[in-house]
Amino acid sequence: MSERASIVDVQQVEKRFEGAGATTVALQGINLTIGSREFVSLIGPSGCGKSTLLRLVADLTAPSAGQITINGKTAPRARMDRDYGMVFQAPVLFDWRTIDENVQLPLEVMGVPRAARRKRSVEMLSLVELSEFSRHHPWQLSGGMQQRAAIARALAFEPKLLLMDEPFGALDEMTRERMNDELLRIWERTGTTVVFVTHSIPEAVFLSSSVVVMSARPGRITHTIEIDLPRPRTDATRETEQYFSLITQVREALRAGQGPIAPEAAL
Picture (cartoon, helix red, strand yellow):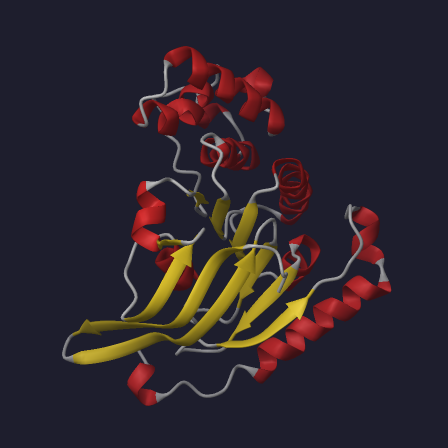
């Protein structure tokens, strides 16, 4: 990982779920430090705890053990201070609000004056190339366009950290590649640190500064692979020998981490 100032610091984190007289260990012994302006992807087999780890960082659930700090603060404090934005697999836009009104929503909740939040919405919609659709409603836009609006909303209050949970998983391959290109353009312009959950090895390699590989449940970090592909990354990047070599490296790390699931950890 980078030696830049730490934005995310996860130390010896464990997450257990209790239910039906049994304990499920979702995550165990997680240590992860992410520096400023990094783009880090989390990848692993289904059920390994990638999204759970993201939710712990977002303070949507609490760790059973260990400590998480965001921008030098506890996760609950960072959430209250709005130090991060979050984008889910579904855009979660409100159909009765225009795209402009959806982007303005977090600023509205924060009590930002109307003129200031309108100005910020114009800037964000320009950033994601949706300016001409500001008066449209979500149901009038394609899936990819809706996700771009969700990204604009998440960045509207200028968070230092953007958490993304498989945001392009429901898109077709060509739209997904375009969204990857758009996301890198936005990341390079804003300088926001990104933590990105994906099941796609090519996507993780194309986007990331580093790829964090997790094992089968209970989820542990088994490898951190630095992605030293030149930037800016383009369609030509996807055709290079170095790109395919890194894909192979991540795939082999995933295979190495898929041992048998411990009986006490099975759902």
